[in-house]
Length: 614
Image (cartoon, rainbow, N blue to C red; front, top):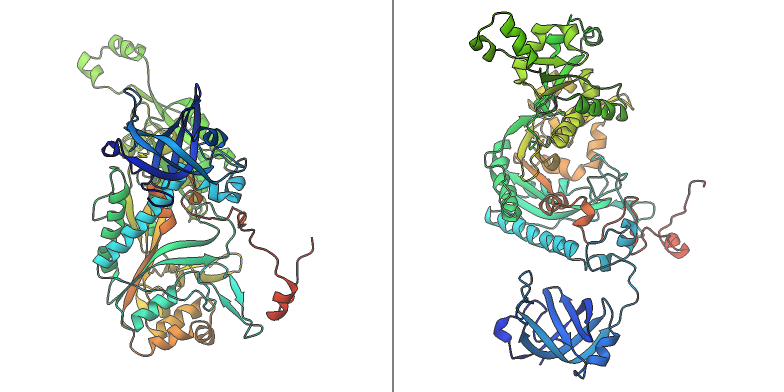
């Protein structure tokens, strides 16, 4: 028999009843039932109930064991007594009567619990992550991660893609975040950078003629903490294809992402193909976000014409400025003063002056009686609408404009509608948050599904207010729509890019673009953003040179692996699906990183510290 086990703790069944077996694992839970000890023995594969009674030679040793001790046991497999079977366990029909027990590893008092799903401070959990990973839910999340990545790889290879590994030590490049720098000992005063993404390398692979590339790529960004991204490092399904247009990338990648979700969604609906394609400007106007949660049915609309020159002076005055607008957020079933007041208070908590609204109520039977007394027939009364608009707005804009709003949004008694006004560029984020809040609080958002869309036609440039200059809006390597001509003749802030995202349930799941593979267009694009040709040659020399020697049209995308798994596992944050994450302050509490370098290390690297004053 093997030194440690003949079976795993999830491998015994009724077929082994009467046989002798050997198991090794962790003591998950220990119960003393009148002198008889029951131990749930756990390993990676499952759980087996073992039994030790006072007649067993192993009883004295069994009395010593505590939670999370690692033990080896020998014994006989037997059927559980009638009525004690556990249908929730794969081994629930049997138990093992122990005749021999060996302690393989005693455990000190646990700093975090393993049994159950007890909430514990996150920093304590991260410091003792090896214990935290023993917990069933987190352990299962990590195994789901393994299976999802396997599924991604299989689907990509079936679609004709080859997996390539690109360098980790590379050159610094401006991709929207700070680089992690690595000092070179051999080249004093010079630094490598950890890749924010394999962007340049995967494009160079297309220059080299490999045609279809993918990689489960580690990416490193020295960013301030963000709720939707792991600090320090994260993983993405990185993809690039040659001789493609935007639709070719969609056709190749949509089945992969959709297939992964259908495989691991546990029966939850996934948007069928083809996914909706929503231009960026439309997404912002309808949903207040470039990553809309389409499980929420609320669609915002511009109602400026209804309020322009109206009696509602607040909005009428706002609309005298050319850029300003009034947007409406319908709220089906939100037609009560209490709900409208709650939304108003929430808006003030978000730094707004409030949230203007109208809500609609069905007036009581006395209105019907008044109609009868005035001579209306039953037929006329039954066809009448006794819904009354309430709130500060209706009296000021008049019955006809209220009617227009009702018809435009198909509002009935019991519904409400909210309004935001001003410069859309400034209020759009709040409007999107209000839409999400209404959908959430009124239970309009269907949490039990995955809704996907492609967001397209992103702006190529944006105005950097802080530095008073034009900057790249997204990926600087994307092809501008209209190519070099657009760069030479259009207002830069009106140029759109062949840039696209995948949005799912309010998250940006992937981002990509068709690349700018023409050297003159690349130089012009960077020139508009304030980089001269010499800077392009210096910082992107490898790719710039490659473009001189026959560059194929190419494009691709990258999907956030951690985010995909978070959604599939119903996890609340990305740290619930990563093995050894840092905390929100970018500290690795388990390994103690970052840490100070020794004087010897600094001397070898020719570095001297210039620390900020405390």
